[in-house]
Length: 75
Image (cartoon, rainbow, N blue to C red; front, side):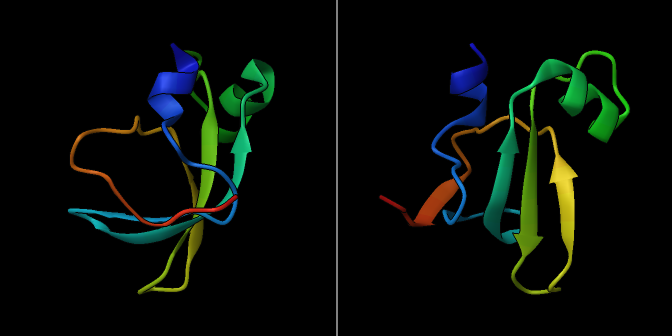
């Protein structure tokens, strides 16, 4: 289930959605680490993204949805 929630996000992948365009920097799947990073007991993963418009980096626990669109895939 976690794999489906993360979707195709891997380091280097660029995607966009209604909130912006993002580059994936890291994907954390260790439960304890994801929960520590996001400060949520229910966290299953954390994805470090860089907002390409603002230039800021932050972790998100948002699931991949149909409104997310891959712009640049990685091998």
